[in-house]
Length: 563
Image 1: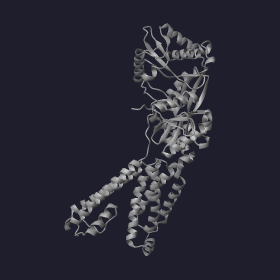
Image 2 (image 1 turned 60 degrees about the horizontal axis):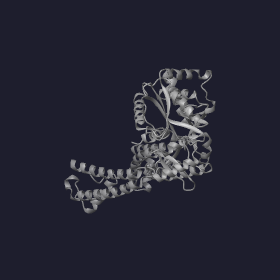
Image 3 (image 1 turned 90 degrees about the vertical axis):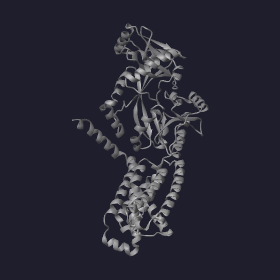
Image 4 (image 1 turned 30 degrees about the horizontal axis):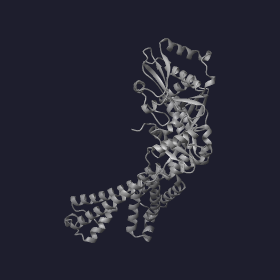
């Protein structure tokens, strides 16, 4: 029953997504074909060649060249299998290695035994790689390439010197040959290049072990070089200087228009300042992605230009720009880059003037608030700056909430418990008869015009039912007193996904309704529905379908606090 109820529809949805995702196929197709070509190379070497083709091949090529081609195809086959793993991750060096190996495989199959079938596969791979070359943008780490080359050549000289001296001085009984200097250099080169050496016939166990050691040392050098070339060049998150933070804060005051703007100056963010206009982008790095919170902060007319500028910066550094929690009205700024979008949730907004506790629809809310009051609980607004004793009480509640309710601190698009921040913020608390705080929420700056919002809302185990409602109602009164027009209640992920043609959104909708891990979002939606006047769609902006496979891991990473 469960297979038909859940797994079968989910698998079919994934297949539909893959079938319709042309960019996804273009992204993984070359890697799969490279893997297939590697297998073709191995099978081609291990199976006997056709007699007429071999006869024709020997007419044009010497036997040594045919054997060399055969061995080269074998080595290239192994190399292609390894390269496919790096290619699917988007490494640029893997692309060039794949092109070189495919070209060599093409000639290798022709010279090996006129195997035009296998050569056709190599040619097809080359064509597909050429068409999709823009997909591979992750650059190698130049520092590691330099270190790798230096280490490779030092190891090369040391191993070659060791091998040459060993061949020259080795006792004749082990190979039946008294090696000259020229022979020692010749066999060392063949061994280091991993070529089969039919002239060397070990006569003793020591001779066999010695030959294996020289080949292993050569293989170690080549692996070291490949690792240095393939190691990706990924930037690290950089702490912003005080002057940069001050500049960004001034830009927020001038151009800020989002409740997310407050978090753009968080310690977890890196800041990219435009060189062509007054503005900045707040982002965090995860894997090969630069994940931007919301959208650039700048003049409305400059946003598209800043989006393009940051995209070029990311491309130059082997990164992909991803935009998280973009407003529907801002999608126009990304249209010129031909990026894709997916709905990730909805943000609840309350028009303060419309909220009243009177009326039938508010009866259950009134009853809950009255019950709390009868038990002696009261709400209070604590104006900033906060005393240390208050912060200590809030910390106890926060730690209890995290532990007992199985929660974890998250950052990026929300805040975590930070004493230095809380001291400077107005805080609404719920107190019991003993004047002890049992629940709180902190009010944060909202750069959207005429809008108020909050960040954390947490309670202790002994807080009464309805305590969260009591805090929100007090926040509404606070916002009205401050002459705000709207109260932003925050986003509920994976909700508000209506009818859509997007396979990815269909999968998200299916998972949110069927998987227990996401069902708590529906409880959060129900809570905010009591207050919301309207809901605004929020989007994730990305390059292609293949990004969606990797993005969940990257998003989890950016939402974890820095250790």
